[in-house]
Length: 127
Image (cartoon, rainbow, N blue to C red; front, side, top):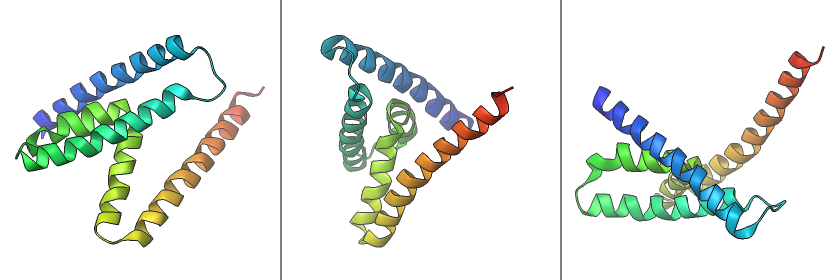
């Protein structure tokens, strides 16, 4: 368990650093934009890589690398890739109802939670 936790932590650090560097590279290449190009590019790339990785590791019998590479590196690079993988897993088993529910709740409730966090912190910090 500790070894797996270390793999996730190490991978997460590498993924987060890669996300930062990708964002900087996109900002330098495209210049500043109102639209979050860096975030969407990382989310799309991370989702593609997650799909390719889980198939590769599964077919090659290398699933012991999941903690480091999928959960750690790609999870640190973008949690959207994990969201995409869980949605696909639900759809691939025919649970479209749960996939739609998962998508709706993940997006809507996450945004509502962010708004709530903003409001709570503004209320706490306002003198």
